[in-house]
Image (tube, one colour):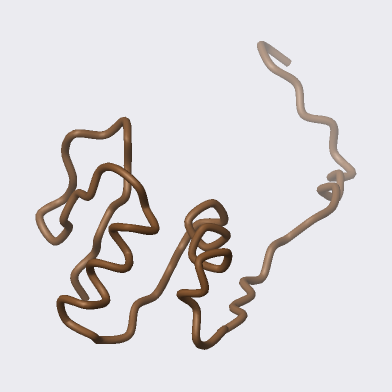
Length: 83
């Protein structure tokens, strides 16, 4: 899938991406009229702008597992240096 990067700071993108500068909503609207295909939006800021502009037709909530918590200590004490 070809990627479109919206940025006001970056000037270079990967080989499979296109850089769009300026207003994200105007750029998204222009991309939609150009090819009319479905788009995936990543990033909270861009998604919020698209939501406010009424550009989102369908939501797909994606979750990823994350490990949270403290590590379990070993019964052996580890030291640095000579023993």
